[in-house]
Length: 560
Image: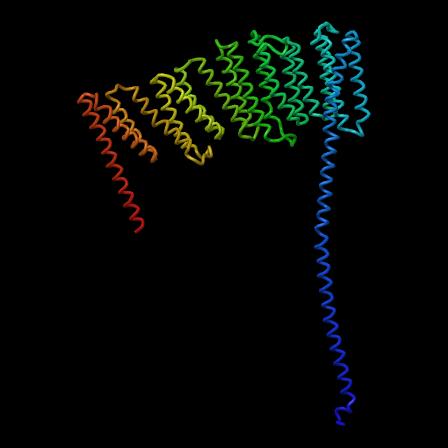
């Protein structure tokens, strides 16, 4: 045997190598087992995860269905049941009148209402919404039963109208008290509507008009105190509707529809209502209501006030309404100044300023009539532009542009030309364009649209005014003079727009000269017109050609 086979250390080394090899193989086997276990776990997760998602979605669906059912049973059926109960008690009261005398039948009705109040009080903690709806129905039934003590029955229980009106007003005051105590805007809205209904049922001036004013005052007070803007908006709309119904002789009480005889307090109540709702812009928001309530109230109040005022003026004051619109114009103008310094909003003072100038337009029309009033209206446009400059209001300027254009179009479409009116529009358009260009930074105007509108109106109205102002043989000469004016303005103001207006005027003049003047002008006037137009055209051409060349030479010298 060799020494290698007899060496005991060689056997030990071989044994150690086999052990290391075995450990290496065991490590690889463990790694493979771990990977397999992880893969199996991921498969199990993927297998069961959709089922869990489906289960969660099913649970959400079940919860949504249960929530819908809960809303239907708790709120929907409460509303429906209260409405049915309301009519049921009303029919019970009427049924009792057929078999019992008037006072006893009314007591039966009041007893049923007391039972509803008692039931609502017992349910106030466990069934809050149902208790609220029962309370609401009970308040309406109290008013209905009290109303039937005198109104809409053949044999009144209480034959004195004033006593029943006092009881109705007492019921409404109690409703307002509970509305404030329970912080319920809905109950306050119902109380307000019942106040206006009581005014209609009373059908006498000394009750009707004060109740409308009182309703408006209460709604504004509650708006200030609690921020109940929905109540205020509803009161705003229905106050003017009630005023209009009164003007139609209150057909709700069976009177034939027509214009009611004039009453000294009719116009006064309308002014008071308009004034009450005009104080809304002065009320601080303090997070109680949305910011949009300010413009919404102002616009709705203005529209409804204008409609009822128009009906009133046409019906009663068609012979003398200048003082009415003059008063409105003065009040709104002063109020717009007050709002400008009192509030930081832009729309509020701008609206009252615009409304003031519209009222002033009606006053001017009533004072001078058409078409003579048109030259005053056109000059009034300059006052509006100046006011827009002071207020820094683009709204006033835009509205004035529309009104000015509309008045001009109305005049040209329906009235014969009047020189005084024609040149008033020319002067107004020219000055307005200059003011807008001069103070466009103050008005923060980013486009030239408004100024271009006035320049276009100036261009066409200048031709129109000169055509009707001068004899026919001098039309060409007058239009050429207008072109000279535009050329001069372009030089003084260094404004290319007046240059284009001059060129357009020359083209119009040439067209008129060749196609109109040649057919009827005498030779002397014809020669004069041709020479004058030729001199102006050639002179302008030479001047501006020389000017352009100088500019090009100066630019070339700067580049070199």
